[in-house]
Amino acid sequence: MSLLSPDTLSLYIEPNRIQAVKAVGLGQHAGEVRQRKAEVQASDNWKGMVEVCTELIRQTKADRVRVVLSDKLVRYACFPWQPELRSADEELSLARLQFDDVYGPNSSTDWKLGLSAGRPGQSRLSIAVPQSLYALLESNFGLKEPKVQSIQTAFTATIRKHRKVLGPTGWLVNLEQGRLTLGCWTDGSWRWVYSIHTDIETPDALLQRIRQEIKMSSTSLKPATPLSVFLHAPVIEHLPFGTMEGIRFIQLKTRNTDAGAKYAFALLGVKA
Image (cartoon, rainbow, N blue to C red; front, side, top):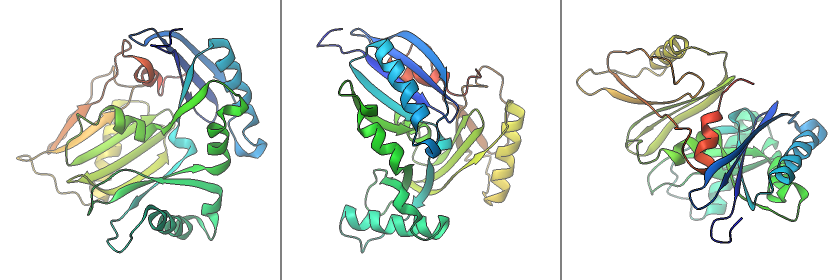
């Protein structure tokens, strides 16, 4: 460990397992990769998650921790631009009302809500994490050290990592094992987003699903100006992907040599 280059432990948390990558040294190269089965559920107040995560933290002896939550554990929505709102508190209050409209009266009280960044006039992402889970992460799993420095979701972490590649308009398809999250934005403004359970395991199955989404969203495809669809699907990225007229597919691949949290994403969707 060096004060100039603290070791970082990245934890990717799913409902049934936790993957950990420790990055070390000035270059933050991946030094350790571990995986543990776990029962990550609110019914036991996340006890299974805490036990496994604290074990991994103690074993790896990292100086700081970063967490990425599977999209299976969170919820998303689009938050339309509201010019009459004058503060972040007003925005979150409206986001809670919208959450309650979808999931039932007062259901938002059990969730920690946040909004993505955006310029005036742009619709943003609304992200919801179970409040009790978020509180445990904020408390460093009950440990004094190391500190949890960041909490992200699989979808938002993919956006953050590949932000320079994503254009002003397009679709993002994020495939985890058993979960598919899709979002669409135009001129930097989010139009829709949703996340569903899926058994997709092949490029053909994913291509078929995208065809369905194109039809359901009434998206007009023009070969002269193809729609950019960004694919983040580590479990199948080594396989050839098909084509579709009017769409330009861009695969967001992650090299195993990438540093820190980037390397952790090479594990997303890999079967145990």
